[in-house]
Length: 391
Image: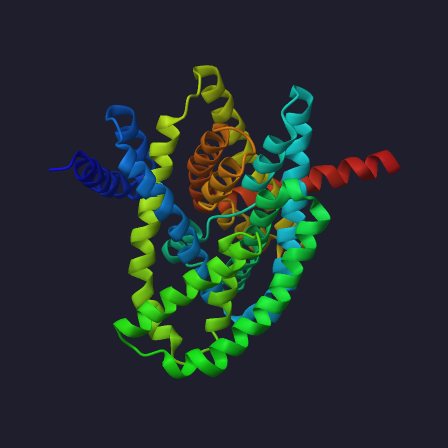
């Protein structure tokens, strides 16, 4: 048997087993696949043919992922998320990037690494957050807010990826190109989906192939204008959500996307293992990743308390569920790496932040009542000190 086939089989088997183990530890299953790629990459030589295949499939995985994200947000929900969820996301984004800059800048950290780390620390894991919501079943207000914030953050991520790709071309140029593509591409894609795809989509394999083809085509269209394929796929998924009979076909799409995302996570682990990183660089990357996870947690809790909905307990609970670090941090690291930004340390930062964020979020959700009481006591003490100073 070809060694590439053997290595690929081992990756899937080990990934499946490790994913089961980390889920039992109440962590994200993505960590298991990432660790499997890292272990196999360290223990076995990875054939060049397999690495080339991973490069192609990683791009396809990202396109399909953002196609599904666009569909799940649904075009009719846009008006609902551009309110409190948007405020929470923007405040969190500002706080996380400010704290990252304050911590890393004094150590003469390169500016691109500060920017990428700030993005990694800014977003929550949609998949793991869903898992936590299903296990603990909080109030409807918390569930709705968490889901809407996750949707907003996914939209911000897909736009941020364009800045990573086009940073060398100038900020203003990439802003104009992104806005124009969002407007023109969104209108064209919506019209095409509503008037043509709605007649062609069927509830069978042909409909599934058609939707996958459309997502890939929109990715190619964005790439043609020197934007990320993820942006085109996202617009395609958002537009096709308006097609009346698309939902049953998207249920068939999920297993396909799951296979590709598994390959992406495995390949990220393999890539980390193959990077020429010294022990000191690895240690620095892990420290930065842990710091990013804690900054994300603090920024999320603070933003939910400041601009969230509901009483103080619900705001703290919302922040606890959103304390996970998004698996899309790996996509951010991947784009920054292939487009010549920071070196491979970004993979270490992203991976460490995801693992740490899962642990933090699990703890916070389990102890949200105690955390709310501690915050209340601290708030009361602060108010008392202010009163004393005034008197």
